[in-house]
Image 1: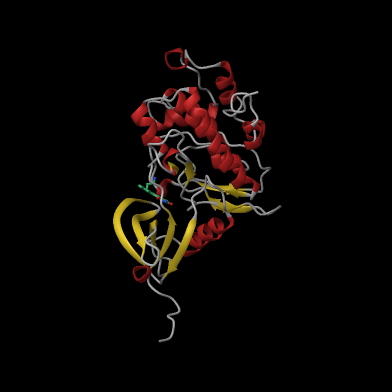
Image 2: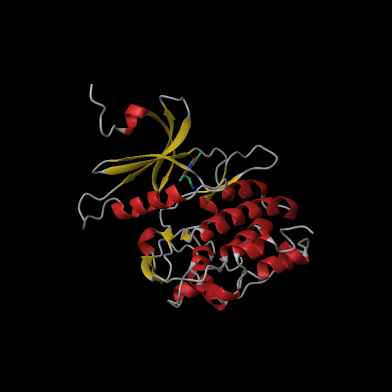
Length: 304
Ligand SMILES: Cc1ccc2c(c1)c1c3c(c(C)cc1n2CCCN)C(=O)NC3=O
């Protein structure tokens, strides 16, 4: 019998329980029939017609796939297979068992510096690799940082969900919707040049809907570092968000003014090196922030 040109995902994979759903679509555990191996199947409804509101833009999903195909790093989830039909696309992804870093912190309240540094080092390795490929994630936040397994002494970090990622072409300015800026970076608010730093400046406000996305001009940036590693570090060590205000407006004002502090109540046990690491990231001027590689050799991350 002729080999079918394109088979449906169900022919090759048994779809199992739902693992999560959100703007990224629906994620289910699945098992490859031929090998018995388990994966995550992320199915995304794509628009049938240009103008329709339902589903995501096919180009956007195709961009995610193109980007995932370029990335091969132990701290970035792997794309295993892809199925596309007129109504939906199914990405077969590496199955990550340990859940979100966010939940892991929630269980522990806060992490000691000894626990936080190994996580941050892996995030930085994944981020610096992605940025060296000139790829910006544009939606990096604790929900998108998962643990490969969690009940092990040294959990492996996996960065997931490149649904909003962009390839920063050499010298090319591209306009892009900065997706859900759950963390409004100062440069976004002021419509200044965005870059990989913007990709990472992330202050966890309340989850905003995609509709609240702020159009942003992402320009060809110098590849430098994101503020969000600073924010994520602040949260890992204190359980608090540095710019959180009573209302989103207040949080935004704090973000734009760049004012935050190390409250004694939460930081009395924190080392000067850890605070210096955070200070060198939570800088308003994107160009002043450490780059990922600079972070990796900061005295707090790289012991002498
Ligand atoms: C065990 C488990 C539970 C929830 C999962 C996943 C795995 C998961 C996975 C992925 C994505 C993009 C989202 C996922 N979600 C949705 C929540 C992500 N923040 C993925 O790429 N591999 C996963 O295992």
